[in-house]
Image (cartoon, rainbow, N blue to C red; front, side):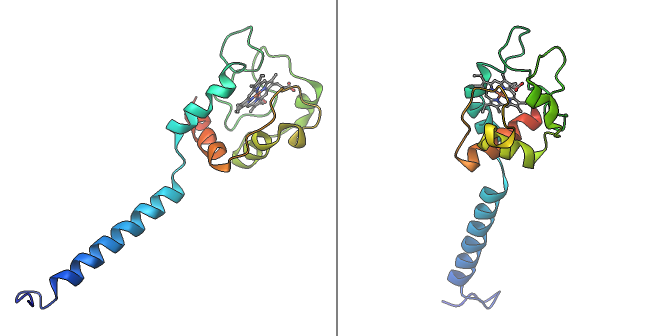
Length: 130
Ligand code: HEC
């Protein structure tokens, strides 16, 4: 039956509302990196990158936006000292995908992460980890 007030068929209004809701949900899923999941991925890094003075790797607290090889009190390899990078999205993405390809001869004993979504989520976590 036709709705007397709006002049529209109620069913059509409902379909339009559902479709725009779905589009919104899809757009959000593509845009938002998930720092919560990034924290879970970080567990594979935490064994070396703890904040303890005797840790195998440098502290990654505040690493986002920092110069490479700049954590206080950590003895980096020459390769890392010479890399002269700023840890922004692009450099972190390349390095975490394939550390040896990005900085040849660096001493991080880690093969890299293959899933780009894991890397994006991890970077979102590192940004928050100040
Ligand atoms: C088995 C130990 C180990 C694991 C696992 C590891 N790292 Fe590292 N990482 C290191 C070491 C050692 C260095 C220093 C390398 C050098 O000096 O050449 C380093 C360096 C880095 C740097 C450069 C830091 C700086 O101050 O310039 C980043 C960024 C980094 N690691 C991120 C990660 C992330 C993210 C993960 C997890 C996906 C990870 N690492 C897993 C040992 C590790």
